[in-house]
Length: 204
Image (cartoon, rainbow, N blue to C red):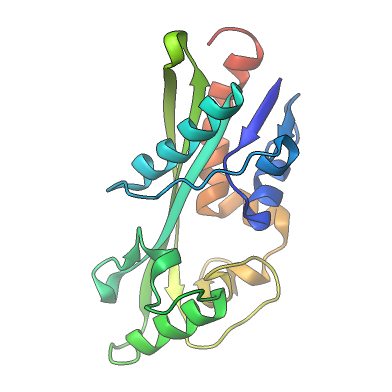
């Protein structure tokens, strides 16, 4: 079975491919199919955004598609940046480093620990009759805190400042195997595996 990932983020691609490596899947990216879609993230929830992306790529390709949306929610900022984690910085073309710097600047007025969680929803989107699609949703969470100094060379996004007390490391200091076991995206994709197995076995 071929499964399309509705993302161009190389970090996400690598993680999801590793998590699903034990399934008999040919995992494709938009570049593999020469698909260039810009899907506005206008949903009010992670699930809505994941479904928007998954459905757009599913309809364009005719393939089962995995869309995802994720965000960082910081307690001291009333859950911000949340849905706007990638659009948090009020400057154009902001980098991951810009986003981390801006977040820490916003937090300096608040006492530590800066408790936070990563959230992810994946939408498994399948073609249905008459141009429609079927969608199943799967969630994952990872709890920790934001620290003011960056640690680690791995991961992407806010990983270098997201500290996980149980591990004694930031997300960026974890190896791929450990990260995919405990991360928000890892847990969400793992939760989607039974639905993928049903598709593989022709039962969905």
